[in-house]
Length: 337
Image 1 (cartoon, rainbow, N blue to C red):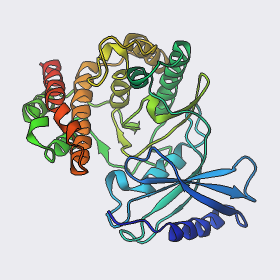
Image 2: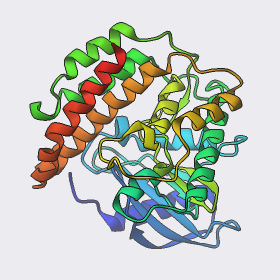
Image 3: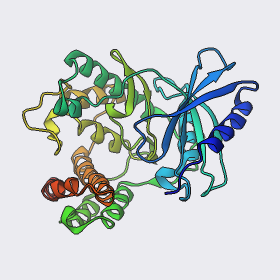
Image 4: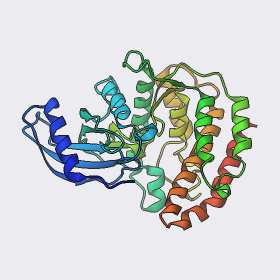
């Protein structure tokens, strides 16, 4: 990846901001932590609209085609489409700049939303857990927001031209990821993929799917979810993809990186499912298949992360995954049997 020219980024952002709020000034560009695909920066906003004191810039890596999860303008599109919709909270979209890719990468800017970004299940594994009532309240708020998101028709959001990704298409997507990782972390993936394809349920009407919907991708304050962030892999697809993913981050799901004795304070998967079905007004069919897909998807995503870390010299993570990920693939396969 090429080095990002920060001075040029600052100048581009300042120019683009004039189309959003003429006369505003952006000062003090500084990096933020947490970006996994693009690069994230904060900048102070002067002489802008009331309430917007800081903007968050997200920019694609320079020198690489801005496609798939690097497509910043596509991320901006869904954020802009969802901003202000009933029951759904995203950071307000401020402006975009298409750049001249791949050398001059696209960017977009949102208002900074105050809040903390914590995954109760994973936090409880590494340090003292969050206050249990807070974890429960946030989880149920996330479920209500997920149901509200899934009630929105993509056509009404101006997203009706997005390609529909079927459940089998989702299997194919993560199989392509497995195709790129070392053999030792993907044992059994081809057989599992074949079983998933052979047993795929009838798709539900497509909705906007976040793709990584969990509390770790939300900004929360107190008991409330202030904004859903990190829309890199959103799609127009089956709502059960998001629901099963959220349920995977509960104690009962036994996430592979979490110790068995961890008590996250999260509601049970049964409670969260019941809350979603109450909001949706109907039971969710064939969810077990999506639980299998979730484990297949997580194994692929973790294998990809381990591969990238190994390229940077961290071979220990890849070694630790050689037992964990094939076991997760085997669990997914067993669930579809």
